[in-house]
Length: 108
Image (cartoon, rainbow, N blue to C red; front, side, top):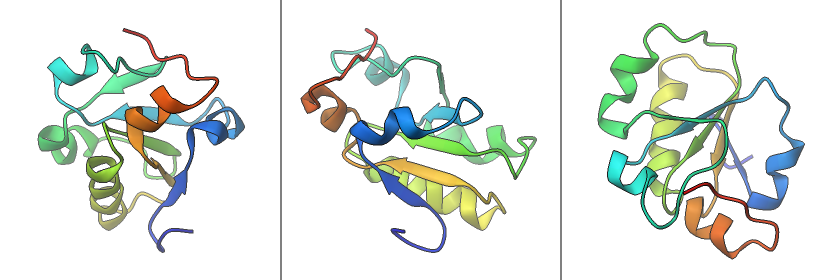
């Protein structure tokens, strides 16, 4: 565990997360559609809108937070933990790590 509030995972661990894990990309729209692309089945929720957007989300649903390098998604995970979310994962290294991973398949 990275902290009491969320767990860091690597790109190679993405396939170990179950289908019930909701994938939230906290980058800005131009980054989401930019050169690094995005993971399949992700929802774009820019960090600045996360608190308002997450107000109605179930607190027990597992969430994977994604960004460019892992810093914003870690901040997002901490924010959500403070709001009562229980099962949070941060993609360590973000989309940069996904791009470097041997089996990376981001979408453009």
